[in-house]
Image 1: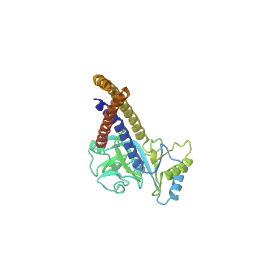
Image 2: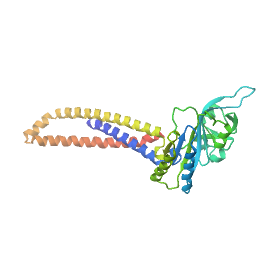
Image 3: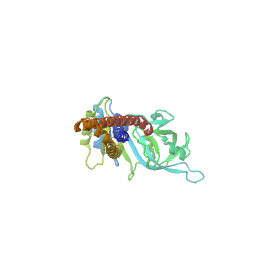
Image 4: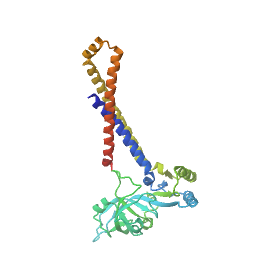
Length: 326
């Protein structure tokens, strides 16, 4: 019982720390894919010309650097009506992507064709849940902003989109040319505007920070433009993981404290049962400090065994846990 209490406490602490560190390493490794670029500028209104000119100047100075634009908004799409009756409609998250998107990672589609061949001025990709809800098929007509588009397939995943349980609606992806054709970007529209920037190949974190500093200098304070580097990508996800790690760490610490109480009670009961043996040792001439050292060493060996068992249990947990998190 002594060994088991200690093993469970150690396993909880090691497993939580290992899982948190593993997730953090994974985020750092794929940080650019989480943003699909090195830098991203976002605004819910028109981005000032000074900012776009600064982006163009930054891209022009670095061979191989590129930039592209995105548009995102919630809107309604519908099937064409029949016999004067409106068709089935649905609330969706519309995403218009420019040439070169994404700079890092890949968009998984069905059929698995290049994004440029699927998204032209009249083609769209839809999320699988919208495909099922509206009973779409390849070539189906979908009406967006009063204009007809043809469904070219399904979008399965995007590098800069983290799947969460709460969303306004399924994804619909189209090109910037198609988005312009819808006429949805007008006065009063709630459109999120994004500029993605890819720096020259081999750009380090210091280069990204220098580029970000240059762009920040061109952003007016009242413009509402927010700049992110790949190290800041998905802040909500990172903050959520930090809170989960802290909570699990607290749970593990409580488990270790409870295990420590169990350990103390076990040691106390065990020493109480050894009074006769201790009395015999004292009759044989063993000194009190030697008796204390003997039982302390025995307790330490049991503690070491429990710690090693806990580490082994945590290793097994860390090996199995990623399979349930994918």
